[in-house]
Picture 1 (cartoon, one colour):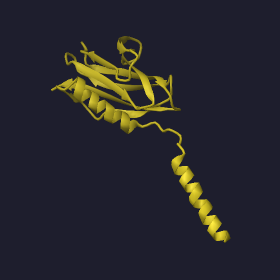
Picture 2 (picture 1 turned 90 degrees about the vertical axis):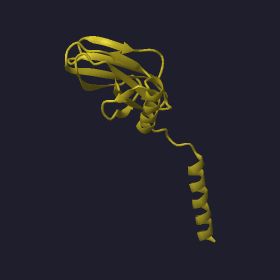
Picture 3 (picture 1 turned 90 degrees about the horizontal axis):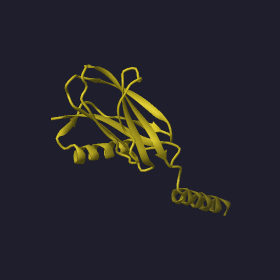
Picture 4 (picture 1 turned 45 degrees about the vertical axis):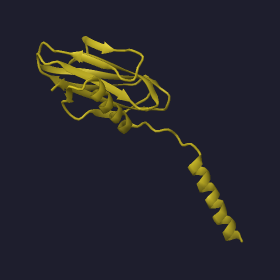
Length: 147
């Protein structure tokens, strides 16, 4: 009888664990899928220059990515985030991060910047997770050029 109760208790605990919502986890894969869909819809004549960056950030956290850009080529920078994010911002700086060239700080989760550098070199992109309802949110960031 004790073995039956133990098995029954284990089944009840397992079923409860399946039905109880777990802690939400940042999903950079979801953010990457959203980024690819947004790029296809908003920039259909563009292609990614390299694999998009992906990661996770808590609200108010930032991450910097360095990109090498060629003079005279128009680049589009697009970011996206997962379902727990409602606002992510994007900034483009010179290589030292001292001069802001452009930004998208609209209240949205698909910031987009278009920029044509006058000089070839390294530039810094900053992604800021402005609003995240989870302990962290997944994000993805891509650099695109016209095909």
